[in-house]
Image 1 (cartoon, helix red, strand yellow):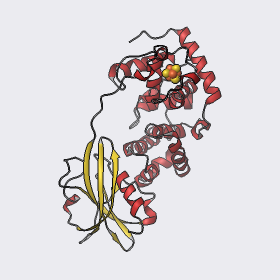
Image 2: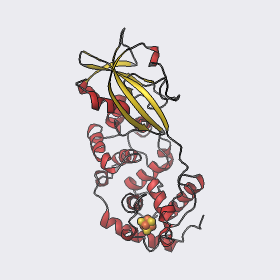
Image 3: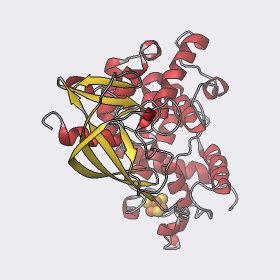
Image 4: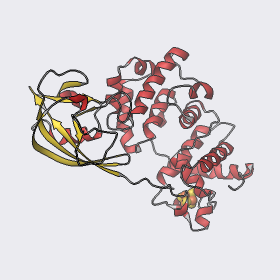
Length: 355
Ligand code: SF4
């Protein structure tokens, strides 16, 4: 790795980027607050989702659960319902658990030391750095995918995206560059904003970049080479069958177990088709050893989740016998607030309520 930049170079780079940020920053709702709770929620949502999508989710979340205590006291279905569609539900559960920890350990006040923030469930270096710098203007660095891309290009850093040596160097670099005399929050947001709007992964706008004259990758005409590509895992194809079981206007869903993939989410009773490759996501039998009557096909579709391409066929079904947990009947109007798997959400959008 190249040596870390000297203080005077860091200062020049900072002033160019901050001047650009003052002109170009997007007006986003969580940028109008210094409330650590709102900033924390936005950071958790933004880690997996585009800004345009997060805006509505963030506003709805804050309107329903406006502070740490409200989140701590909410039931899990409310929290997961507000998260429904953002994916990665483990993060919503971690937020919920962390809110309870903040109430228990810090009397409902977001902690102000890095050690206390890192001790909260599900909070890592990135989130701790983002909240402490943006809400409390503490001199803490952040490294996320945007920061990785921008700094890897600016300094032409070798190494594959996400690899240990590159990550470690990026953290040292970000810590060297973050302002120590105030303005760390703006600096971190400026760095991420540059990655999100100018130094994008597929079409960087180097002519509009405040660092166009400083950038080593640009000078070498090798922008597309940084950061180095990750080795990709080939996606697995799966074929599954879901059951559309409606009785007295209510749909039968099953809650997935509280651990493992899509933990705690609701889905149509689903099994893997016998000819499909094996997968830990679904068994080739109906879950919980239940017997269902399987009728005609209603809908066929496709869905992708991490490393899986799924072909689904939804059939009409009937459920003889008593319905008990983890199965439950749901009225149509309750489905919108329910934390559904992406695949079931798609099926419901296609079929409800006419099928
Ligand atoms: Fe990214 Fe281009 Fe700016 Fe370099 S000059 S930091 S590659 S946008």
